[in-house]
Image (cartoon, rainbow, N blue to C red):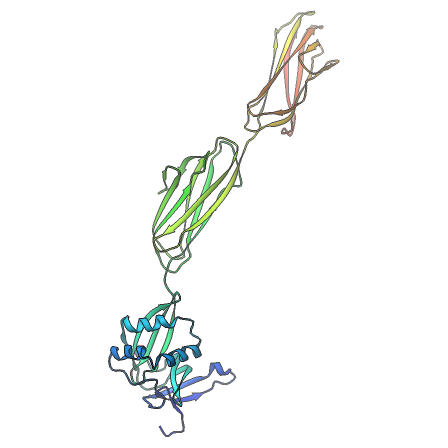
Length: 387
């Protein structure tokens, strides 16, 4: 102890400032234990001795000062409560261990020394207990010979956490399957014992299928995941049908025994598709020269959405001549039927055209249908025999 090396920490330390490093990186080298002037408190023999140190009202301000100097982010009340009740174990600190910090005294005042290397020839016998503060786990270690203590950060408190995503196509035709998938992720660092996922069934939608484990009841579908591992993901899906044009919202939630509930939502537009059918017929056929036949034209929107600007133009075969039309105009051999601004889904319009046979032959009358939806006209012919 008379080597010129300043004794601290209840140990004898040789201060070795590492070259080129700032003061915060200063390392303290400890080789011996038990200096009366630098030990934090009297030596420890039993775990109850340790508990008494942390409940000593005279030492609490010094403990507080040490932890303030260290910049500890925990709650002091958690430390004191744990020291009073938590299990205390006896451990050995091996020679060559660098401690994050250690309490000490200088001139009787508490000081915090950083980067303390235990350079003794034998391990240090110490008491230790673990505790939780501000969602992190810590271990408080106190060597027996000097009552100098330090706290180790053991990382976040193990706990699960849930995140939930909902996905569905932006648009789906009426009557086609709607595939809705929910992806749940355990964002925590511990398993969730039981995760319950629910998907509300929106009004106007019918459930046709669910992935394995999905149970439908009343207005929702439920899945249950047991022992959901940390950082794991699981996808569950359901298939719906919507018979009408609408906008559907799929609202979902996930909850656990430990995890906080989370919610997600996704939407899709159920849209219709026009489907135009052109029907034509002549009666009678065949027809004699000088006699009339009647062409019937029917246009039906068989789809699930409106069509617009629907029109049929009829070119009468040269073997006949148009006489009259239930609507539209006649110009030579051309009969132009009216434009229908909107032809609703399942709606139909019909027309009749009277034509007279004028020349013997096999006449081919052409029908041309156009609309706002059709990218190309629908073309059709009706053969009429004139004798």
